[in-house]
Image (cartoon, rainbow over all chains, first blue to last red; front, side, top):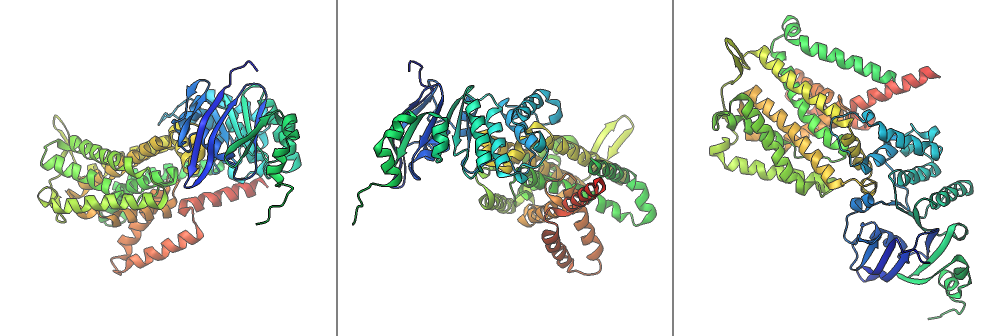
Length: 253
Length: 325
């Protein structure tokens, strides 16, 4: 446990009106293995991801990535630092081909906005795209419109887009939500493989998947960190079961 | 691939016809059609300006007449008040519209969809009424008239737009250049990034694109395109008038761009050509020609939502797929 944490969240709070979506949360994620965040709906997991990636600003507290304060950076600036993210509702560029989706993503990383040269001139980016297409076996869908792809293919494409631009940390928001068992297995495998090269944090509801992948689990409930530990510790924690399935004692009011 | 070959051939054919027009048209019809053709060319730049924003960035502007007007008045005031000469005035008009697009765009592109559309209309209305009030400068609805300036003077050779053929080729050259630049823009890394913003703003930000700056860049480019068409129109008509800054001019451009085919290169040209021809042909028989324009607009929107060129491309695509089978 000597490694320094790559991501530190210090006393972060975010309220939406009267609802404390994230309530004074402090977390630190250390390298080595996959970190998972679990918790019932409305626990504040996705809000936490939104805070990390700059989509919403926290009311108080700070977020540090590799020692750098990223609390008030904008989403595109955070992406440029190397924090990539997939969304719960799969998010790609639907009118473009798979190839072009990967191309603009890789190109954005190089900050290349040449206004007149044809895209075919930038062979370095093509090489990068080809490498990802090979790695993820996307050849068969490379020249299809991304909007016409199956759900599973879109998810893999989204992972490809997170991988292509030298990520340091990838945040997966329910990566296998709505997938067939076969697709789930494929995606889980990819993420495990990926976690050997970059830091990975996932939000996931599928407990089988979580316990298969995660090396460290954080349980959130009602905007707070409820428990944290290894999968073993969490599975033995009686309180965790309670927040998922409710207390045994029925409260009548 | 076949689709590309066919469209490329058609583009060259169209260009050849446009080049030969000054000699063909007087033979087959009234020379009056030359000026209709010039108008089509000029307004197609205006439609291209709307198409660039809507078809490639997903921003529907109903206020492009503002930048058209700035291009127009830039030329008129440059010639009459500032004495900048032909090219100086042209540049002045285009820069003025670009600058105006930068100022208004800085606010407008923060908004999306109908809010964006509304604020662009509001900006254009504000400046329309300002232009109406400062009549000593703008001439109000009467406008400013000026004489045809010289394009170039080299020894004995004087080129001036007073000569109809010279004027036509000057317009054709500028419009061709504009469409060439347009094509380069949309197939460049900048163009692809803009399309990414059009498709999915959230994802665009997540891959590290500065969405705000990209949209603003596109807005200024589009303003410059509109400014070029305004500058050309001023030179062509030898006058500038506030009435061209009114929002119904913007609306007409939107109709041309969308019905021709937003998101295609040729769409704005085809749309503009079709509707100006309808106007010229039918208005001499029937003053309610706008009814026919409306009917066509409704039909195209229902049966060819991607516009005329979009429909054409789909037909070609289906044909080539059928051939493969």
